[in-house]
Image 1 (cartoon, rainbow, N blue to C red):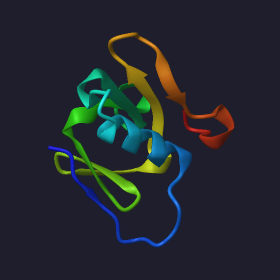
Image 2 (cartoon, one colour):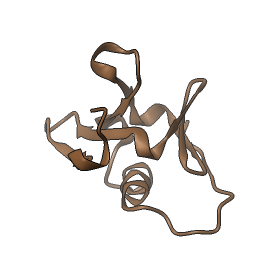
Image 3 (cartoon, helix red, strand yellow):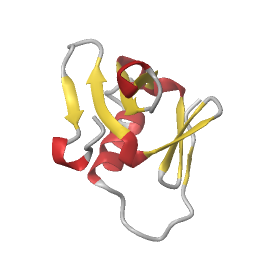
Length: 96
């Protein structure tokens, strides 16, 4: 189930706009995408989650019990094509 809750009064980031497009565009299926995010202590400091199992609340992605801030998202991949459609610029994350 995908839910979006927003309490902030400022504009969305390009990353948030991309995620919302994948979630809400009638020709796109969130189940075809996965998010790779920075998770310190995990193998290679990365974890992967399916996009059809997330919700958005303010500047966080909620997956199961985890609140993942947008700035920790490293990649968004299309599972059908194998292409990475978002790749965080290296200079924005020194722990990558």
